[in-house]
Structure formats: C-alpha cells, structure tokens
Image (cartoon, rainbow, N blue to C red; front, side, top):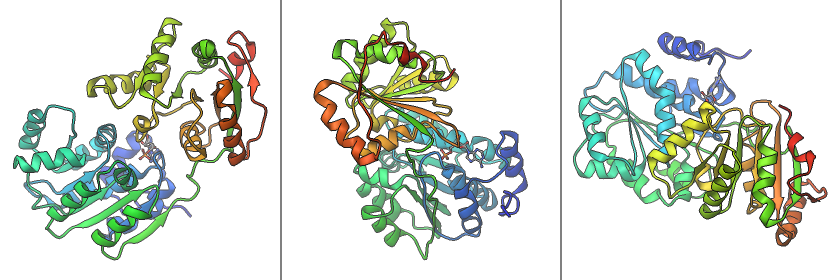
Length: 381
Ligand code: AMP
C-alpha cells in the first residue's frame, strides 16, 4: 500500500498546500525518502531531474525550519545553476507560506544589493548557488550559525561544473548541528567524497525506473542539407504545442532561433551567454505557451523543467548515447508518449550510425527536404 504525504509524516498545512496544486500522491523518490528525512536522518538520494526530488528535500526543509522558529536562516539548499535556484524556490514558495516561513533565492548574474535587501528583510530558507553564497558571506550579509538542515541538489552537476571546492568550503562553514540531504543522478567520484565527508550514517535511496530509456518514444533519423535545416525544423515543430531543439553550440542556437523567427516560428533561446533576465523571459514564454520552441545547449537545459514537451529535436547529433537519452528524456515523461528526431548532415551520418548502434535503435537515416509532408505529421496534434 502506498502511503500518503500525511502517512509519511508531512504536516497538515503542507499536505493541504500540495493538494491545492494537485500534488496528492507522493512520487517514488518522495515515498522512499520522506519518512527518513522527516525523522532527521541524513539521506542520500539517487534521482534525476523530473523525479520529484525538489519536494523530497523541500518538504523536510520547510517543516524543520518552521518547527525551529529561529531568527536567522535555518536551512540551506545549494544548487548548481541560477535556473534551478529559481525553480526550487518557486516550487517551495507555497509550502513556505503555509508554514509561515520565508524562502529567499540568491544566485550569480543578478544584482547582489537587491539580494542583500531581501536577506535583511527576512530569510528562513536560503536557496543558493555556491559562488554567490560565498560572495554574500564575505560581505557578512548573512549568518549560517542557525542552520539545521543542508541540502545539496544535483551534487553531480555541481561537481561537473567545477564547484566542488566552493561547496566544500561552504559545508565546512556550517558548524551548527545539522542534517544533510544529498540528491544526485550519480553517486560516484566527487559525490562519493561529499557523502563520506559531510553526511553521517546516511540512508541511501535510489529511484531506478526514472532513468530515461528509449521506450515510450518514437525515434526518427533524417539526413538533411545544411541550407534546408531550419526549414526542416520549422516543418517538424509545426504541429507540436511545445518542442525543445538541442544544438551543440551557442552559435548554432542563436542562428537557428533567428532563422526560425524568419520562418514565423515563435522560438526562444537558452544558452550560457545570455543575461539572466533574457533566460527568465525565455523560460516563462515556453512555460506559458507564447513560444512553442525552446532552442538550447545541453548545459543550459540542465535543471530547467518544462512540462508537456511533445517533441525533442537533435539539431546537431548528440555527443554520445547518454546525451541522446538525457536530451530525449525531456519528452515522454510521466507515461506520456514523445517524438524524438535526430538530424544529420552528410558528414555526420557516421556518428549518427554509431549512436544508433549504441542505443539499439538501428534504422535508416532517411534523406528528406523540408517540403516532405511526412515531417509535418510526426506529432499528432
Ligand atoms: P522535480 O523533479 O522536483 O523537478 O519535479 C518535477 C515535477 O513534478 C514538478 O513540476 C513537480 O511540481 C511535480 N511533482 C513533484 N512531485 C509530485 C507529486 N507527488 N505529484 C504530482 N506532481 C509532482
């Protein structure tokens, strides 16, 4: 019998706030971890983006901080990117309201003075990227003296992005008695070091079924011409309400977005060179449906959660099979079907063939031009 949030120990105001936004049944990672984390244990969870891990660590954080009733920050959530910081903060805001605590979100690339003002007003839960938090501590803009819970979200990404020294520096600064929750898609290498050094008798939980697999998706492989590529994309995305197109470089992202706009396709770009405000607007547009195509690099797309993606297009063939699965996993979520299209230029076909072999998806790479009617009917509208 699956337990409800209440059965797992979640406080009634939080249960009600979750129900008010349609979250009534705990996802697997929440079923697995909530009892332990609410009981105050250190938990190490292996889980991917989209598995529901934000609530798995957010609920215990909110509940613990509310019970603690301290004057300064009681909980710290460290995340690798500013997008993830905003998303975590937003996902927890109504729970914080329900428990009468305040969450503040700080990240680099935004005005630090404004963040300091917010911290001064009231902050119980802090969602932060490592670099900005260090800046703020150096300016003595906040205190970590009352922290009772620390969360490391996407620890593997923080390691990949080279943040381990900062993360460890910060963890050493938390000297109060506290509980540590760690969530990561992989638990080896640098993450394993964090677990060993900064967690005490952690309970391990893993959600196996959330790994992206090729099942549940329809895969198409097309050989296209350079000059016709943007038009091919325009034809493919036409019937889909929401698509993500992955490019290998920022330059390709920018160029494709312009070309799509010239073809009257509403597209937004997400890559690392863009200003924070631009990125936020882009995410808002795609979530609200005012743009139907998000053009992104792999790194920029990490940690960004967009629901109901019907179509994923690999504008450039992905680097390897893992990237293919990761990108394609943006569609066919939560039991929905999804369509995945990979485009190859003539000199990329060999790479694509190798990729297919690795994925066990050996099929023809079909030569197409943008006026092929097949392209407009890949996604059922
Ligand atoms: P996350 O992996 O935390 O980014 O969550 C992915 C998405 O699933 C978010 O939109 C959450 O609001 C949603 N979600 C998380 N847990 C549940 C749940 N138990 N029931 C329904 N939706 C959920």
